[in-house]
Structure formats: structure tokens, C-alpha cells
Image (cartoon, rainbow, N blue to C red):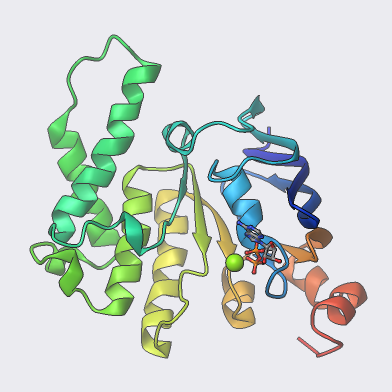
Length: 252
Ligand SMILES: Nc1ncnc2c1ncn2[C@@H]1O[C@H](COP(=O)(O)OP(=O)(O)O)[C@@H](O)[C@H]1O
Ligand SMILES: [Mg+2]
């Protein structure tokens, strides 16, 4: 069974069709990248899946269950998590506290799924938070306030917060935006590592084609809201429609 599927997913903002009948299929354990020019509808697609926006039409299925239009917090509890913007970081709290709060949020969610469970297992939560900080290379910085982190570490903390809920499916929307080449390299290494070590299924939106080809098992290409191609990196590289529509004929 597919981990995630969208069917005819559509979002209209007034006259504009930002996402136009997009069908995606994501298998457990694979990493799918969504590429396309600015304004193609990539972020909107992810926001429709993670519940931040409601679709105008179409469906989102997670493990075959219809999750269309559910609230973001219930979607996180089901095992989908998005690396949010800096807003989700509590600036005055330490890196460790931030991770614990994120891990706790996901744990609380299990109450609604399992009402017999009355006590949160704080040891579990702390352990998961620490493990995530280690995975993201932030363990040494765990005692300092999040606001004192350098930019690249702050972006990685956002990823750590998304990972702390122990998701089955992690969405990363331009995780390396604004990072220096070194920070970018480190971050891509980390993405590859969490994929391998945790077996997290990853949906990545990214501009840098080198990164895309390095981490993707499959690539979906959006253009003006519509999916124009979907395939392995090799298939996408050699797809004439992709080269024309998206890359203006530039060789990949
Ligand atoms: N909340 C919104 N209200 C109106 N238009 C929006 C909104 N969000 C995105 N759009 C428009 O939808 C289109 C797709 O945007 P987006 O999904 O952010 O593209 P991408 O992430 O591929 O750059 C763009 O034309 C954008 O201006
Ligand atoms: Mg975007």
C-alpha cells in the first residue's frame, strides 16, 4: 500500500489555480522530490497535504485513509510532519527544551488514539529529543537558547523539531535556503543520514539540482500548478517536456 497518495489535488486562490489536479504517490521509505519553477505550486501542495491549507478539490490518502481537510495537529499525530518556519521555534527556550516540547506534542497526540494511556512517558520523550539533537548535529548546543544559534543551526533545529515527533513522513520545504555552501553540505549529509538510519520517508522541495539528484529516489515536476512529469532522476533528466517547460532547454 502507498504511504501517501494525492488524487486530483487542487487549490484555487480566487482566479488562480495554484495546484491543478495533482496526483502523487509516495511509497514507504522512498524520497520524493518536488521540483518546478518559482510559483509552480510546490509549497501549496505540501501545505494541502499537511493540513495547513484546505484543498478546493481532490483527496489526500495516508496509508489508504482519507485525511483530506484534517487539522495540522491531527495530521502530525498520524505521522506526517513538516519542517516549519522559524516561527515554531521558541527563541528563549534552550535547544533541548525546544526538542522536548516538539517530542511531547507528538506524544500527547497519542492520547486521542489510545485513551487508556494516562501518563506521558517523560523518559521516552527526553530520550527521543536527545537522539534527534544528536542526529541533527545539535547535541553540543543543547544548553543554549535557540535564538543564539547561527542561521544554519537554526534551520537544522527546525528539522529536528519536525523529526522529534518521530514521523513516518517528513516534509522539507527548501531546507537549505539561505545556507552557506558548508552548511548546505552538512544539511544534505544529515538528510541522507536520517533517511537511512531512521527509515523516514522524505518529501523534499529544493532548488539545487545537485542536491535533488543526490537524495531523490523519484522526482515529480510541477509547472503552473500541474504535474508535468514524475520519474527516476534519470528519467527526469532526459524528459524533453521537463527540459522545455522547466529548464528552458538547459541540459541537466
Ligand atoms: N495564500 C495565498 N493566497 C493567494 N495566492 C497564493 C497563496 N499562496 C500561494 N499563492 C500563489 O500560488 C502560486 C503557487 O505558490 P507556491 O505554492 O508558493 O509556489 P512554489 O512553492 O512552487 O514557489 C503562486 O502563484 C503564489 O503566488
Ligand atoms: Mg515554495
